[in-house]
Length: 277
Image 1 (spheres, rainbow, N blue to C red):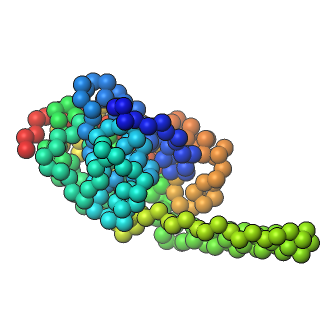
Image 2 (image 1 turned 90 degrees about the vertical axis):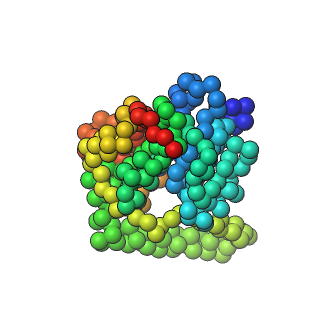
């Protein structure tokens, strides 16, 4: 961490455990920085819009290289983070060696994640770390997502909720204007939606033994593992995403339930073989 580090206000937790994941990434990088004399160089592969992970890591003052081919997401990232330590690119800079490579919910979108990891290891210093998160391919998130694609539960629920709140809003405006005789102020303009790459869904459905075997073939040694939240899908998010009590319990249950039952996993792996460029 450098003098460029900025104080951070963390977001609230989500049904997907985004805050829990962010703290895992930040803690692992903090531990790594204490073993290095240089400022960490970090490759965030598939950084997307950087809203969940990247912008907070960049604010720590590390040399941050966010790489993504989705231009809309990358353009959004350029609007919210900047500075001499921030590099947002469409391709990996081949002349840089990185202390850590981040895969924040990326591996499950790739046709051949193992070959990609092996290729990226060329740009990781000896003893460098891979820090990542993947959904449990047979856990609650994937099961709920599959059911939602099949039956459209989330869209139906959101339609009903929209109708309820719209009716409630219209009644409130009528009462305010005609009974309370108060001025109706125009609503503020809606903010632009945050871009997200929806075109590439999950095509890998990992079990934890799959991840361990892939790491072994890549010459990586697992150094840390943490379970994410228990639930976390589109429908449960629509139902409970604004309930802080549920989000708290969801986080705690993720820590005590068996690994095979939680929605996601966080991991750190160390490069244990020399890979020349």
